[in-house]
Each structure stands twice: as C-alpha cells, then as structure tokens.
Amino acid sequence: MKLTPYLNFNGQCQEAFQFYEKCLGGKILFKMTYGEMPASAGETPAGWGGKLAHATLAIGDQLLQAADAHGEHYRKPQGFSISISLADAAEAERIFAVFADGGTVRMPIQETFWALRFGMVTDRFGTPWMINCEKPA
Image (cartoon, helix red, strand yellow):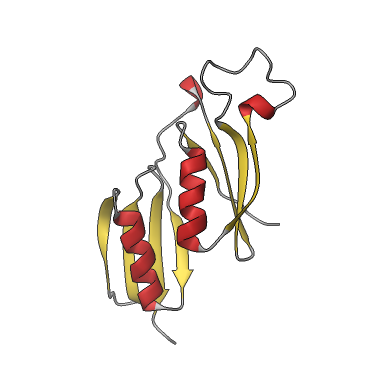
C-alpha cells in the first residue's frame, strides 16, 4: 500500500505544481486539462478548459497528485499538513523560505527538542506544510 496526497486547487494547480517541481526538485509526470478530457465536451465550466483535471508530480520516490476543483467542488485546505522530512538543515531552511514567500508562516523554522529545524508554513497556494530536519540519533 502507498499513500499519495491529492490536493485540490481553485484554478492554480498548474502554477502550484510548476512551483513545487522547481522548489522540491521534482518532475511533473502527467497533466491533463479539462479541455483534453474526452468526456468533457459541454461539461467544462466556461474558462476552465485550460485548468488541470489531474496532475502527478514525482519527488524522489514519492508522488503528489492534484487537480483544479471548480465551483462548489473546491474547499480551502484544512485539517492536514504535508510533512517534508529532510536530513539537511540548510535545505530545510531553503524550502521553508521559498514556501513562506507569499505564504503564511504558522511556526517559524527553528531548532526544537526533536529537530535541528522544524517549521510550519502555508504556501501562497493555500497548501499547509511542515518542514522537519530531525536531530541525529
């Protein structure tokens, strides 16, 4: 079994995934717009033909998937965070700073009793993240 987070965006999925691809060193493996879907003729809301109906981003051996959810189907993310575990404190600080730019810092990145660096941030796309670099055992 493998768990894969699936995010919904309010029309910014492509921009968010390009941002995550660059920031996290990932690769977009697949994307399909609503306009490219075979069954979408006449069902796609006006102006949404170019929005993403599905996307998959690989980051190392992990996947992150997402789509643009239009109208009543979109809900602001809440009640979860995506946790990133890193071995390098400088890399944790870099990722945190990139996510914090235009986002909201919920807990500044800092040393804690369990981590060399830990911080919580919601990026400019509304995705909540926890960045963690544990102390060596």
